[in-house]
Structure formats: C-alpha cells, structure tokens
Length: 464
Image (cartoon, rainbow, N blue to C red; front, side):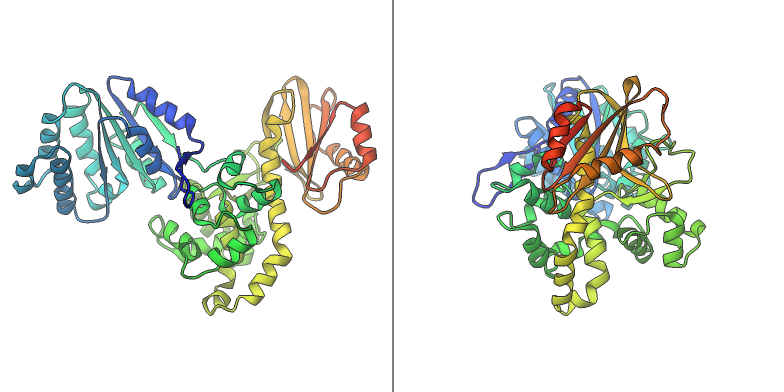
C-alpha cells in the first residue's frame, strides 16, 4: 500500500495488494516472523503503517544512536503506549528487561511487534542479531505475536536476517522484498496525462514512491528535470550519494562504474577500458552493486546466464540511470547554476533516453499482449545484430519484437528487418512457430495494418 499524497487531495492507496495479502496471511498464524526489506524510498514504512492501522502493535524505529540511547527511547515508547509513567523513571540497561516488561503488557490477544531499520541496531552492536535471536527463542516464539523486522540496507538485512550464517536464520515464516511501483499504476499518480507523458515521467522516477511524490505532478518530465532534479537545493539532486554512502566505502569508485554504464559502457571490458582499471579489480564492486539491487546482469535470451561470457550490465532504477547520465557528469555546470548547456543537452537527447525505457516497458508488457504462455522474455544480440524483444514459449512458440519510439509510423520495412534478424536466433529452428510484435509511439502504416488482418502471427501495439 502506498500513500498517494496529492497536494490538497485525500489519501489514496496504490498497488501493494499482494504484499498486504502476505502480511494479513501471516497475521492469522499463531506466531509469525516476517522480514521486510528493500531499497530506500520504496514505501516499506508506509506499507507497515497501513497494515497495522486497525491492529494492536508496537512500532520501534531504530537509528544510529548508541545502544543505551536506543534502549532508553524504546523504554519511553513502551511507557507512552501503555501509559505507564512509572516506567519512564526506571533505569533499564538491557534488552531482555525491556522485552520482559513488554510481555507483561500483552494479553493473549494478537499483537504485532515491529522494528524498522533493524540493521542500525546490528550496526551499533554487532551481536544484536544473536541477542534478538535468543530473546525470540526464549520469550516470543510461543506467544501470539507477529514479528516484523524491516530494513533498507539490503546487503546488511540479508546477512543479519536471511543468510545461512545469521543467528536468525530459519526463524522467518515469510519474507517480502518490496519493489518499485509498476508502470501500469502511473495513471493513478498523474491524472489527465497521456501514455507518452507517463512514460517520460516513469523514465526519471522508475516507480520509487518517494520520487513520484516529490515531482510537480501537473508538470512535464522536462519541467521536473529542470526545476527539481537539477535544483541543487532539492534532495533529488544529491539522493544517490545518500543511497550509497551507508552501503559502500569507496563511493567514488562505485559512482565511476555507474556513470560508465549509464553512458553505454555495459560490458566488463568496456567499463575496464573506460575507467582504466583491470576487470579483476572491478568485479567486487560490480558484485556489490548487484547485491544492492542497483545493477543487473543481462545476457542474450538464448544464453545461460551462469555459463556465458556475453554479459552486459544494466542500471535497474530509472532515476539512478538518469542521474548518472545527466547530473553526475555535469555537476560543475549545475553547481554554479549554469544550466543552459545541460538543459539543451537534455532537450536534444531526451527522446533517445526515453526510448530505452520504452523498450523495457514493452518487454515487461509482452506477457499481456499475447495469447500463449511464455517462460522467458528478454533481448537477443550478437556482434552485428540486436533484437529488442525475444520471448520463448511453450510448444516451440517464439515471439520477436521491435520497439520504435519515434515520430514516424512503422511500415512493412521494419517488419521485414525484424524477420531477417530473427533468422539469426538459434532456438528450435526446425520446428518453431514464429510470432512478431511491433511497438510504436507513432502508429503504423496502412499496408502493415492490412497485412496483420491476413497474418495472425503479427501483433501491432501503439505505445505499451
């Protein structure tokens, strides 16, 4: 559930039905232990608040203060929630005593206990996972309690709660990795916008709720770029530094890698050459960015991702993709508010930038635009050829797709080019049944439309 905080509007909820369903299912169990994690700004706390709004719950938000101050704040929150002024006057120095007291205030009625930003408690005390594991095993696991541990440092949340080596391993009954909002919900945030407008806005926010709600939603994407993302007093201007500085040490190295990828150096060899760092030295940084859900590997659809050298690296989040393409390289201009050069560059290149996002959306929508099931969808390429969409289906069915985000309509020549390229894809060639799908921003020629009436294996889609 996500709060859509429209200025002057009432609150609405957008998406998150599946996650809320999981939490409610866990709530019905006598005892449950849920790990909820995901990158910052994605809406974890809002989801929790919506879930507990009509239930008995204790919510504690951890921070970076030392452990004694956290214990004191925890104690004071218990005191306020249960209206026990005497508790405030008592000095408590350990977590066991706090949980013992909390349990005296909980009847047999179902109760939810939440620690948000759990990883901070583990940062200030490296043994906190062990402490909480013992408290859970000895005091909580046989009670009618639902535990929710929530956090946004993805790597640390995994190592402290989900990894085999973690003291808490095996305790969870469910885990939720909260993802960004899908494009299909954008029209609920941005009223009276065209599909093209929505795609452009998605291209700079990537479905992260905080970023969506920070835009002027009655304005265009270009307006928001120039007046929000390029505004050095706006948090969006320096957000990536905040996102990464707690997860990594050598911020400049990670930023250099992300910038290299954003401008087209997507192979390990190309990144290495551009940064003049050997590939072996880059590998740990690349792996870390993948663990943080910032980068993803991409291989041709017919290749095995574990056994191929044809690997490309891609920034997953559209806001970060945009920031490393157009903010990070031009900060010397932006810092002195010399925006003319950067604005001109954006205006000249924005359609090209958005076209890549359009391809991503087309691939994601392929499942909804065909009548037969697919088990794998992606791109395909070799040294000389690239196909925007290839989907592998049951019964030897395969679909090839092309995306054109241009002002010209698509004609028969584009279909012919796609068919020619498809012959280079080696996959069940002797018995496969081929389909073709074309996505166009500006429609299709009359002769192409007429052909689709005769050939049922050709699908035309305007926008996505």
